[in-house]
Length: 126
Image (cartoon, rainbow, N blue to C red; front, side, top):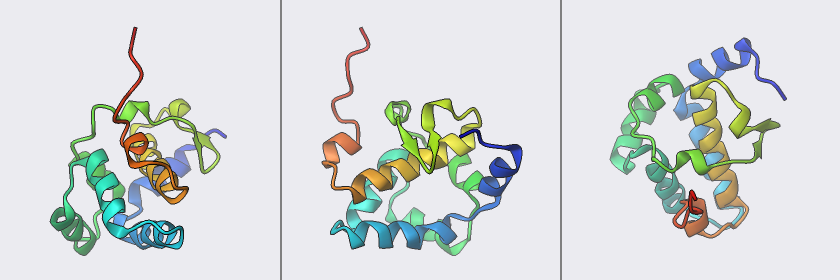
């Protein structure tokens, strides 16, 4: 599926606070914890629990959320299809970053091991 400029604009204006409860519900329904979710979010963005709460309270958009994040240097290792989009083919940086987060949450909910979710042992770049 190819993302449209309209799609990118919707994602840019969407608030993290509007999506966060869905992330929590998704992982808890599958037996994972809020703490694990926060660990995944912190790995990707550098945001700890206090900072996440501030972001939620301020109703920051995803544009602001990712503009201020320290994206993990291994984030580019997040690949595959999420929400009908192949992550590595998304040309809009913000949309790709949001899909990185969606993919990590999906992997957590599906029971993937934390070391794999956090790309602990990335393949050698030889």
